[in-house]
Length: 251
Image (cartoon, rainbow, N blue to C red):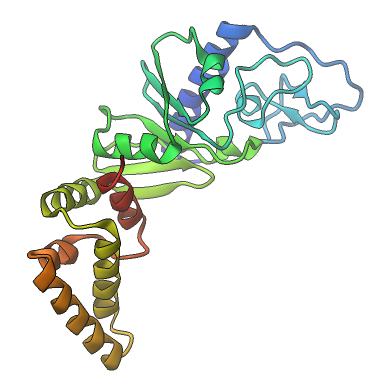
């Protein structure tokens, strides 16, 4: 595990381990026989709490991702539908389910919002906090989540942690969202234009490239300045393109 991953894990643990336990109580001791000696999430030994079936055990960090288990009081499941932006002193927690927010009421120095994961992530990409911080889009509740954390040390290169760790050029996302806002083109038309330009750049065949150029010129007559914007946007299929689409057309 590299330095950034270790730093992210410590920050995560501070919020969802130590602070969460302080909010709702330390996990109880399990007396199930045959409890595994190593955490099913990160492999660490030491103080573990058993799952309901007694076949898996989790350390205080991983259990907050894995969900609620026998004898363990944790505030909810940090599974799909949750997003978090964490700094050393502040946590922004978001979920699409308002009922879930109650689990973290009273957590000091935290901000709770009801919104989709996509809106929470794009909000951080467009206006990130001062680094270092970690941005998480939680996947299905799994103890493996603690292995998929990475700290971001720049406002322009941001790692999206969760089911995987994806580096995102946030500067391109911000620039793309601004350009699209100024252009005012419908999303469906923009997606078509980016797809055409991607075909041109990748040059899979001369015939397809020529057709794409002709179609893009035709669209440019309807939406003045479209080609200039499209050529400056991330290519179709990149994570930056996906987040530009979210940010530029978020309601």
